[in-house]
Length: 171
Image (tube, rainbow, N blue to C red):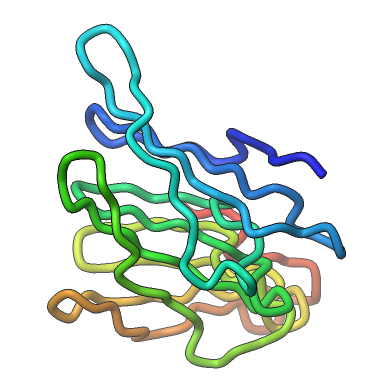
């Protein structure tokens, strides 16, 4: 199986984050990984390689990425039989990162592909689940509550047929 290094890329200042989710469909789906680089003068140096803590269940980590400040969000949409999850990592300084949260949809659906796309704006985090609702798709809206995220709303497109895939791309 291929690791698909570069399937997702996110930039924030002098930091580049590159996903290597591997195959996310079928029996060969693996845990995936995220590689963090930091620009130092004229070169990009590898800072860390991240994996989710419960790797035996994680599938496709790094399929979608979001980085802002000292926080990094890495989607693993094939996790838990394609219900999906998003993992939050926080920089602790000196090139070290720690996993601080695992976000999932309030209503677990198989397959939903939760984490198919990510976007954020200040205190809101959007997580796409394009296979949810029989392929119509859903966008989950999370709002920051202190250092945690709480799901506030699900955006849907009522009255459309399957294969709409709402949430497959977000910006």
